[in-house]
Image (cartoon, rainbow, N blue to C red; front, side, top):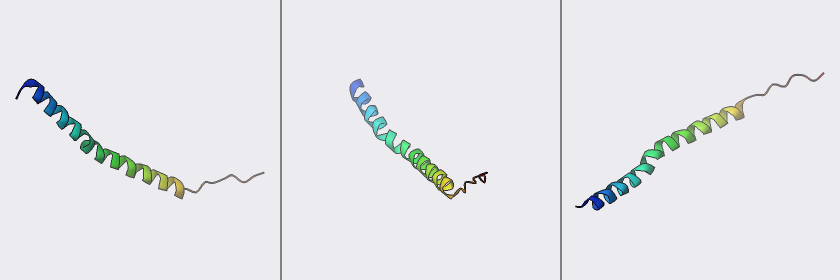
Length: 51
């Protein structure tokens, strides 16, 4: 196995690894944003009485 073969194999391995590693953080971010949105929807906004 030559240098170019090794480089190509490691490039492919890294390329396949990236999406798998990014998925949990993407999922966490989505859940956190959903919770924030629900909190915002459930908030009661208090308007001061008009004079």
